[in-house]
Amino acid sequence: MRGMTHWLRWFALVCCCAWLGACSTWPGMTQEAPRLRLSPASLGRDLAVVQNMEVEIKGRTMSFDAALEVDQAEVRLAVLQLGQTIAKLTWSGEQLSTVLAPGWPEMVPAEQVLSDLQYVWWPRVCIQAALPPGWHLVEKPLGRELMHGERPVLSVSVLRAGVIELRHLGPGYTVRLHTDGDQPVFVATP
Image (cartoon, one colour):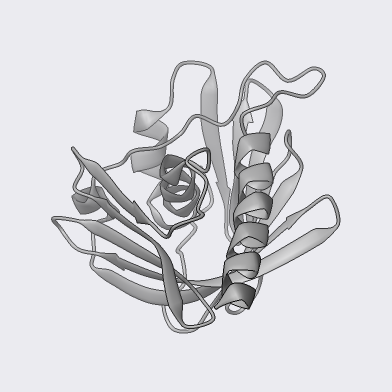
């Protein structure tokens, strides 16, 4: 049990660094990628996928599993490590609910996890409609880029079948999703 508590604290610290890093700016950057809170129904389909997520920041990589389920009413996300559920998130389109394991820092915002997954899985048109003025999403057959003016801020790319990479260019961290089955659908922007 002591080993699990130590590991959970290390995991929480790395998560905290990654997600808090998303809140800082870098030279020449005017803003962060806006956090998305798109409705579950706007996905346009039901989705159930188990993904291995690797978060890489400053040369360190951590890995955990994420079970994502979406239907017309809810987004449900369970984060698992070593067979233990360490976080649960439920988003109804109006209310975000989280349950975090003891030792998980409150500073790790569940909203960032939800937003990252919505940038990967939700349709471009839904994301674009939610963006503030000055932001736009450019879509290519194997990915998309979130732009603030002419500057890329966030990049989503299919590296190969079953591997999707999400790069936060300002804070400098990367999330890789390894998934079997469902894949996000990208269509080149006209």
